[in-house]
Length: 74
Image (cartoon, rainbow, N blue to C red; front, side, top):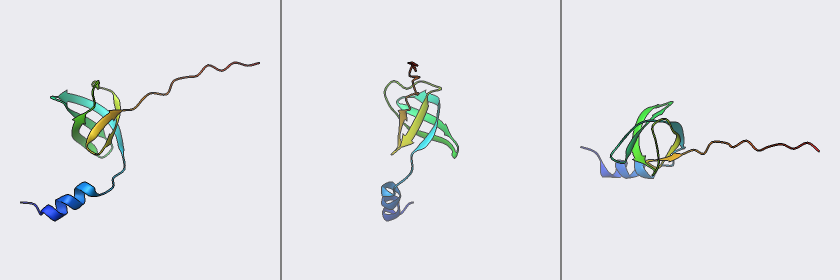
């Protein structure tokens, strides 16, 4: 049994975003492998296994890959 006050403090505590990769998707939930271990969070629409994501507030959001911009020398 948990203490509701401690549960609320834990939910409201500010946390850094954690980066990782999606290892499995099941019924709108994603398992994400991070440096701290595997976490299970809700999945953003369109996620696929292997996508790089950021986990924040219990949700996995895809990280957009950097796009190379062509360089023109004049």
